[in-house]
Image 1 (tube, rainbow, N blue to C red):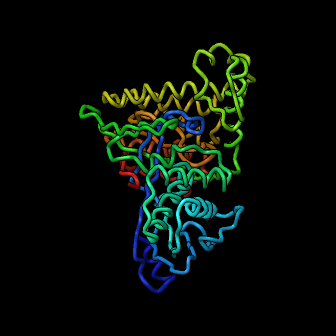
Image 2 (cartoon, one colour):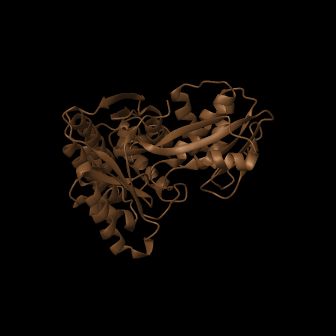
Image 3 (cartoon, rainbow, N blue to C red):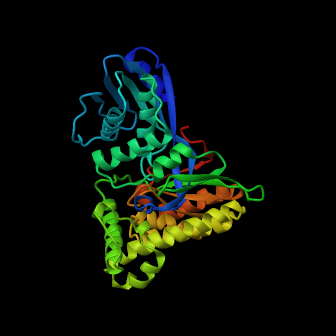
Length: 389
């Protein structure tokens, strides 16, 4: 790994440990976990590596092969507000870990991502693999649920991104050739194996060539609009409701939504329609996967992509173009943009027999529309993989 070589170059000694956390894809369940929806997801065989050694003085010293600035802090003197750089997620994670556990050792580490940033939840992966490293050198063993929640709180409370548990759960629990079917309301999950009768598949990742950040995007606004819809629906129906931030669309019965949805402002109605229809798609998708019907699972993923564009109203021009190209490319079972959808990438489940023609045709059409992105746009074909544990 390049991170091991870089570690040796910087510290003049080899790292003692190497840890890995995969990226994730979510064909169904997008934009729903922050309001306690259900999701389906997979880990892929690309992700974040960290080469590291313990530091007895409690200092955390990190560099990334993807960013120039080296980051440093003491485990008990983390800045209380974010610094505005790539390491904010890890500062937040340090704070959350030290709130629950007594630790004394820091780490020196070099972080390496195996794919470009954008759409595969690299932020969640880097937080989880960092927490794994910091826990390892301090000889503590938080539960998977604790690691997930520390990571989520680092994003929500320190960085300021209103994300849910989708990313971390996929990257933690997923298993190769299994679909993770997770209810984010109570964290119950099922790993559904690929049915023996299922047609073969691989996972294609189409990078638009445009990177993005969540906290500076409209992501948080979409979540607030959805929560506003849930709050209003509860009021219309005479349901009890409490604090705004504790209101979730999952609390709204379907019959209440159907009865009062036309009273909602247009934008709130669209966000709620995406959430409700995505909840249905996830359940249908899980059953399609269970019986080995990857064509139906893929069709539902395409439908999810449409709803994310027109009801959730995200998707950059580049990602919308990639999505449209995928919908009429032979050999693609289904797919959608991955992640928040403001830039980043699209994912697709593909028939391996069509891999070469899919890569060629999608690339030609996309670069014809966006020739300025030649050299930045790229395609990777992956397999599913095991999660962090």
